[in-house]
Amino acid sequence: MEPETKPAEARRAGGGRPRSLRIHQAILKAAADLVLENGFRAISMDDIAVRAKVGRMTIYRRWCNKAAIIMDAFVARVDPGTLFLPAETYAESIRLQMRSMARAFRGEDGVLIRVLLAEAQFDARLTVEFRERWTLPRRKMAAAYFQQGIEDGFLRPEVDPEAMIDILYAPLYYRLQMDTGPLSDVYVDAIFDHAMKGLMKGGATSPI
Image 1 (spheres, rainbow, N blue to C red):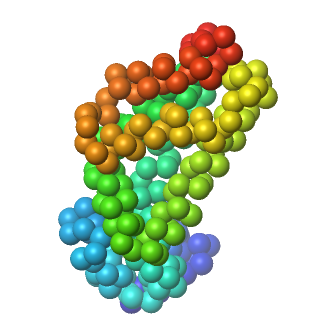
Image 2: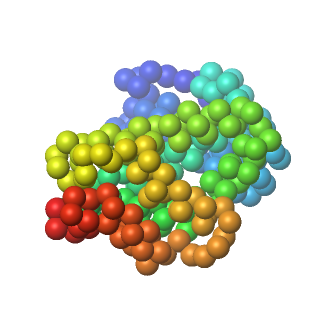
């Protein structure tokens, strides 16, 4: 079992990340890799510990169940690359964020989220962890961004940020799960353009 140390004590010679952070990242990578290889049901917390080369208690001190580990692994992979970033216009920042989500879902992260969504129908703990660690935080982030757009005059004042989230993102999740077509930039732009005509002041999608 690899001992945990405080960040200040865990620096390697010549500098580097704290050992505890390296362990954390190794566990998350192991969890995601195992789900992609074997599926959610087939793996255990012990399997994750073996793949990450850490002791069982190292994992149990951080997470109470495998659903929590795997959701943290998924969020760590997808969240940093799918945030709202500054762009030439407010509308364009939303378009680019939607494209970044679709791009992530076209690869292994899309496979991972499909597995998690499917298994969540049968695993109550995974349902809770998915909602608490992904769905609700992401909705909170988007709702705040859209509310700011309303206050800044980019969006119509009567827009409901929660409804706007569903209008923009539900098609992406539907296509991901039902495999009705590619999550291409062309598809994302079509959804975006149709939706934003009713959401932006004056129906514009690019000038502001």
